[in-house]
Image 1: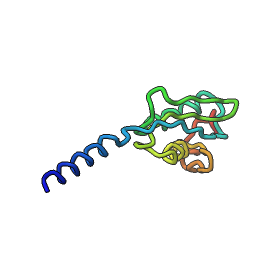
Image 2 (image 1 turned 90 degrees about the horizontal axis):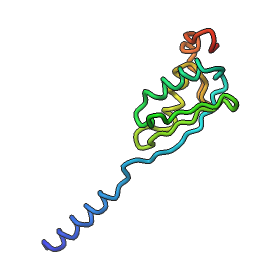
Image 3 (image 1 turned 60 degrees about the vertical axis):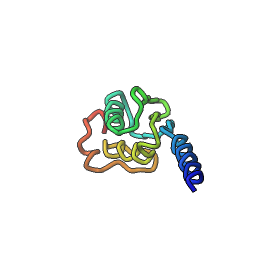
Length: 110
């Protein structure tokens, strides 16, 4: 019986040690109202506060109005990224901007 228990413990420990520690992904988020660097900085600040977002892992493309974010999906979900942008006052993919955040945007971002 002790031998069986030893084998079970060994198998369990092997299974636990093979669990993922991180799952880094890149999210491409459409932000139609992103007009300039001031708007982009608001977005970067909002997303950068989330856990799991990689340091220096946020880039902006004004031409396509896209924000690319490298993040660990085991720490935060893609929807959290979109909601953070919406709470900063900008539509993110299909997530609408929070009206009160839009009203608080600086004039150059309205």
